[in-house]
Length: 109
Image (cartoon, rainbow, N blue to C red; front, side, top):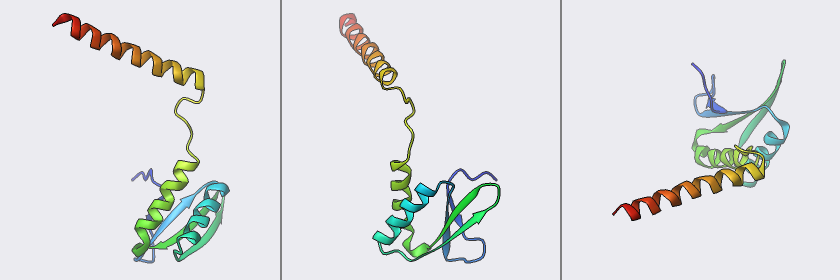
């Protein structure tokens, strides 16, 4: 089964969730947020072909840990359309089409 999230249940400890990060900056920020929220965690680093940073968090702290995970994703997210001119051009195009649709609906009635 494919897991597209960066967390899963701990394979051996039932009461824990494991969060995985593949970039050191993301892992460091997640750790910083866990410390700030005073959440107990255990961390580990797996070095195979790719380095994986692992954090085990108690399921009782799941809500706070998930919030920290979302903050990490938000801080390091990539824009869907990285070029600002193209992004604003698409927005302007859709606003123009919507405006024409509204004008057409008004004139038809």
